[in-house]
Image 1: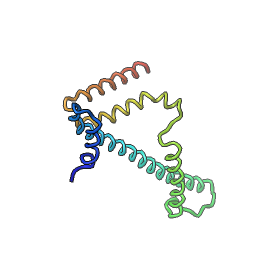
Image 2 (image 1 turned 90 degrees about the vertical axis):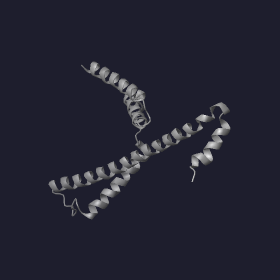
Image 3 (image 1 turned 135 degrees about the vertical axis):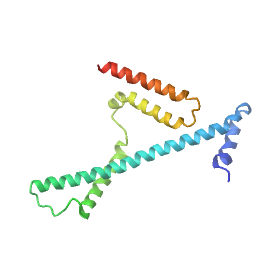
Image 4 (image 1 turned 60 degrees about the horizontal axis):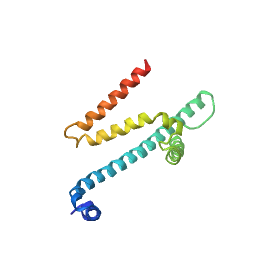
Length: 161
């Protein structure tokens, strides 16, 4: 059972790539497929995190509101641990999850994105480092990233004192 990349993508890539560079088709496919897989995993993790955050936030919101209502002597016949409270929390969680996915899934206003650009770059470099650390035999890439991060950290500390 050959891989899909070997059966489908290799002939297509060899057709496009000149003869002298065909030795690079397998590494291109190997790392290209890994990159696509890691990207899908990162997005799946973001969606899972949004789902968990919406569930937990809704649970905290509903139980907090019920506790505050009890303190203010509002008469709700609902216990924070009851099934009814769970259904209400599920509804709130659904709205929260829908909002995160459709409106804000890790999208910030332009001004905040601009201010956080150095941190976005550092996060991207860390993600690349963690993915590349298994294939980086000499440690060159990892040492380069660590050096860049150290310089950034020293610069931030020097600016804050």
